Image (cartoon, rainbow, N blue to C red; front, side, top):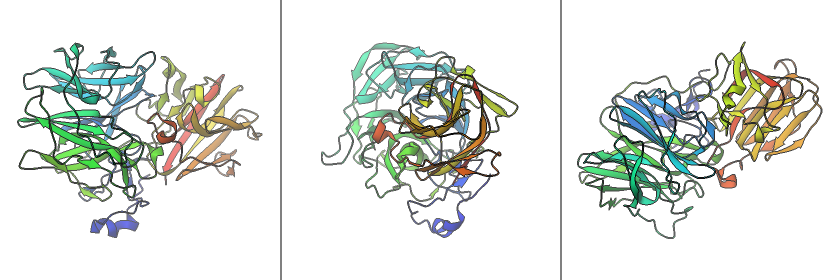
Length: 520
């Protein structure tokens, strides 16, 4: 599918006027992937739609690499590649071993080797891990535990004296060994972040996500404060600078550099920024934000142009980012995104699909053959079956799929936030099973037996289900509809998104075929 959804607002785009909050002016490339590139030298945020939080960005010659917090999704830390900062394609996952819930990482290259510093929330304790690779495509090493249970959001930095450091949440840092694979000494406090006025409406102070950049004679530190979610006006970007990696750090006189000022803006809770030099030498910032009214889509990746001032400071220029903006000059476009539809010609784990909180051998449950995904059943329900999920990119979309089950297997389609908050429709050979609020809500009779085609529509948070016993030629509306606008972090916690996906529970296996995702 190659739909272009620009025609009705062509005049507004040409004039550069603000877009209504309900306007759908992005383009779809391959099935289900929103494309930021408008094709006329401009782009429209987000550059990566859906849940792509805490962007960790690396410039490596003419190539740019990007990865995100992957939390409980595995394979995780998917690496994306670009040559123009607007068009991105996934390379593959760097992390396959479940070490816990992955928060904001640091992606670096030092002395010809790539490093990922990975903070995790895990039981029995939190920690920060490092993995490394000689090629960005991998293979990546086994995770090495650096300890550091009291911090999140590491950022690798190299000082003017060649020393290597991890800067951490709260204005702290710790030295790294020369090989970057262990720490030296103790954590030290080196920076007191700028504080906003006490009457601002925020979630909490929460200084996190430090990013260190060197330009000319200065080191610049960007930090997120104000809380990641909560009120739309909470999250923000602040900056400081120093002549030395060792400080002292001088606060930016224009703090905060990025902040959502009103819930009327198109992007909420904007923060967690990285700076990068563009292909033609201009500068840009990538950070995340929630689309207004759509916390369910998670934090999406936004691109903002940076302007440098004569005094060595900088500021962002994009405003609320609701308008088309001039794209970075130079560079070249890679094919953007990937299809969210799947004919199961191969198993796209870590790019299209991921498991939720998988066991160490979870990937062995899934294989493809004859255009079908064969998924061995596990657990008793979506809550304990480690469903296979993908990142939705649209405020409204539809998924549908052929599903065939063994006796004693229950399978179906779901919209899944986490193991305690999801909805969906499954079936065994005799009955349907409806899921709502993370609970089983009813088991009406199933007239289709062990095979049917199922469709789930999420129309701006209103969810409906349809089933077909003849391969999709005719459809029957299922008598259970739902409203899911509350299936998000500010209700449940966890910093996740509502993901469409597949599950198989009980015994035996389910076979899924001809999976289709259509953004609406």
